[in-house]
Length: 433
Image (cartoon, rainbow, N blue to C red; front, side):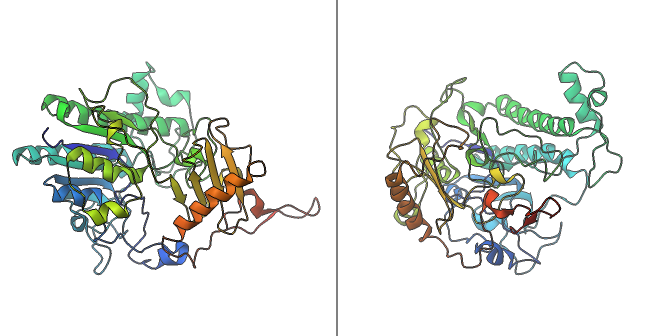
């Protein structure tokens, strides 16, 4: 089988692979101060993009980057590396330090972002075909991140889809918006029209693959990097985590459990639901296996992720996961306190229903059977102390292999961070950051 061109239409950077969310430039020190995180992704670390570039792929990245954040159109000398340092041949980004950037300061960038990203993706694929090279693409869409600002035409496109002549009359504002005064469309329409435009542009991308006879040899992956934003943080964020507890910035399932869609005609069966569990750290070994890109022994040994290529190609053997899914979120959450999870989490390999969440100092310990209770409300830690002991030992051993966290200011107290009034007239105080 020839190497496959791959598209990753997915907003989760490709570290081996973790979301990096770094703010670099004028505030280069902020990551060390806030969460003891690295100030940038080390270019010597193998990434999906560098590994596939080494294997001969024409690699592109278009959209958000979040590994360095400088003023639009200004490259910060001595700032984070450009995307080319990670094996990326063609790129245009924002929240980055790169020679070619999108103008995020343009208030109408959110409206046009999906179209611009797909335009760049099509140009990259055309370039790869002209060079007779397989291609790999990261397409990290802005939508449905804040801010959202659909145009009148995009609002009407949503209305036309539902047979509504004037959709704005169905859901009037006012809607306070940081960019446009007097923008009176309600939050539900803002969110849905923005997402509808992104969906239309993804459809245009798939149509291009069909029209150029690339679909049968192209795997398309679509997913997200976290659960929905809390509408108390941004009014137009009306995404719903469904039956799960947690939202963005939370290790409860509503914050980390995302749908993943795959399209590969002739390989991935259409219309089927897979029970496979995959995390972003799995994408590097998975993409490398599918593309027949060799990983060096020291690279394989350092990986936390697992090769999940069998989930996309039924002909591949299924291999058991040997390292549990684990998370370390070093910042406090926002919004309702019951969405704010402890700092650490682990899924049990021995008894797959169990999920442990805890703070390193054991100030919060929560054990749930997510097979029986999706909402993570029934804490079973007191009932299964042996499970807590076993999982906490694994989790803390892993944390000790990561960068130390002496400057983490987050408390991860959740609802325990709130001090209730001592009298009816006393104000409620908060001691969380």
